[in-house]
Amino acid sequence: MQGNPTLDHKQEEFQTTLSKISHEIRNPLALVSSELQMLVSHHPEVSSYDGWDDVQDNLEYIRELLNQLSNYANAWRLNPVPTDVSDFLYSVVKTFSPTLDYLGITLETDISPGLPKVPLDRVKMRQALLNLLRNAQEALPLSSGKILIQAKAVREQVCISVCDNGCGMTEEQIQTLFTPFVTYKSGGTGLGLAITRQIIEAHNGRITVDSHPGQGTSFHIFLG
Image 1 (tube, one colour):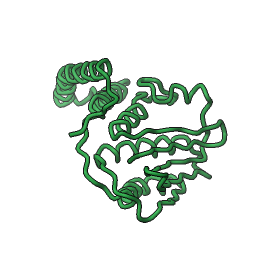
Image 2 (cartoon, helix red, strand yellow):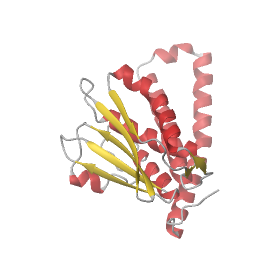
Image 3 (cartoon, one colour):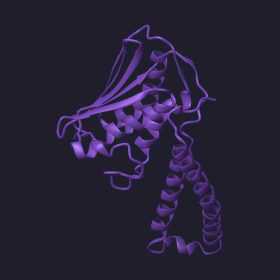
Image 4 (tube, helix red, strand yellow):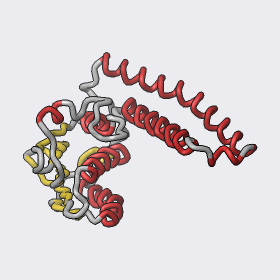
């Protein structure tokens, strides 16, 4: 297991607190869910009442938020193995491309062959990249949306880029982009990109972003 050397005591304490809070909330949430299931099993008519679906949607949102909190709290805990970056990226593309095909979004790749192997926690780095891909997807117009995944050697490192031709962001939005619980999406938790940065920094890497309103966004991950 590898820890993030930049994780200071306050950050570690904060993440431990989040993990404890998440755990404590899960227990009563499970009880509420079980009681609602019992209620509907004995009184099926309640499922047709106005607001029942809203209750279920809110419970699902709480579950997702707790999962995100847990992911954020544990993002720095890694089990890295030497990984062929090219093969790894193509596996991520294979996972996500059906969603983009369904939405009519073009996915292009420009992955240099023969990239050096990099120690990666494959599960968590996949999570980080899928977060970036979903972020790109949500910023795109469906009729002409395009995402590019690029990877190349940059001096002693490997640079992985996720670029889109979507709505872009203002400088003010970029400044708070990786801040936990800050979101510009309706229904978002504000943790996806914060988790992504935590994962990348735990790999001793860094992430940068270039974006302008109406001109799309590019995320660049530097590893190695």
